[in-house]
Length: 125
View 1 (tube, rainbow, N blue to C red):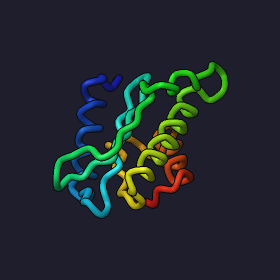
View 2 (view 1 turned 30 degrees about the horizontal axis):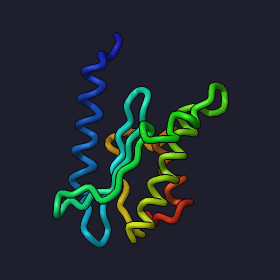
View 3 (view 1 turned 30 degrees about the vertical axis):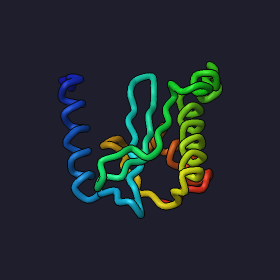
View 4 (view 1 turned 90 degrees about the vertical axis):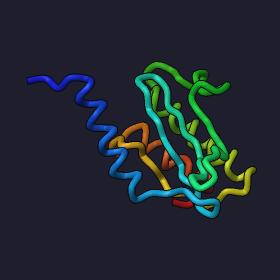
């Protein structure tokens, strides 16, 4: 019996709510939130107490799609570029420490690539 896309979406939303119960971004240590669609990846650093996005990066920004080449890692390479770009923007905004919110996605593939490149870029989590 196949699992419908609605059931998959609801399961991810349940996992996300479970993770968010434990993770809160503060001014001292904001939350790095990741959203992954079928073709794009988005990441933002959020201060949950003030409800503001401090820094954001996505594969839609200039240079994100240009790095996507067939047969060379594709979406994973784009996720690495987004993580590096986010870390650069965070450093310029004087953000060093964050808590990682994987958004209910499995820590694997594009999510792991983004996290690793953000760590290499200087973010601590």
